[in-house]
Image (cartoon, rainbow over all chains, first blue to last red):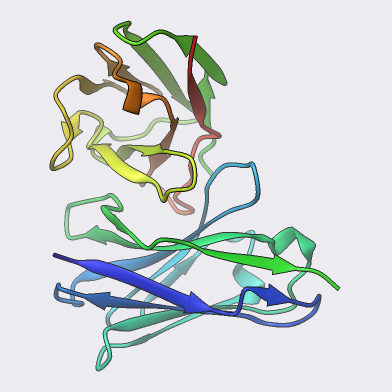
Length: 119
Length: 108
């Protein structure tokens, strides 16, 4: 059974860098687009971007200038960095298993990491 | 960017009733690329419907999806207590793969 476990710092100051990692267990890492999504308090979902096992990426233009993603296939992990954070980046961040071949959906999600940006 | 508009914002119904949730896209979305998720309080979203009408593994058959072009619908035939949650549509037709703002289904 595939499982995503995520971790990273939950409290940041403005201008710092948000760093989260998601570990994949119980399933092959290859072929999928591994995805990050966030949800500000009391609001809806925002797609941040995705990365495949070759390191190919696709980002939301709203965050593109501040976002990097990386993948470590030897550890079955992928990571998200968002630099120069502000209070507007306060949200629950989710990792998810995304599209694969002709299957376009996110079917397995991490539990979410609450990130708060505050001085 | 494709904008998805969900309606109503909140839907108040009783267990046993039928729920109809709408998702309208600002431009045509292929049915292959329209997805529905359910999110219960404090939980991660859960995949319900993909390809506009295909139920994900383990999803009860009271959930159904339909629609094409710019108008899509999620129907819950007979509401169970556990169905009261927030529902999101998402499109994978063009990046960024946007979500609707959600419909909250609450107990009347």
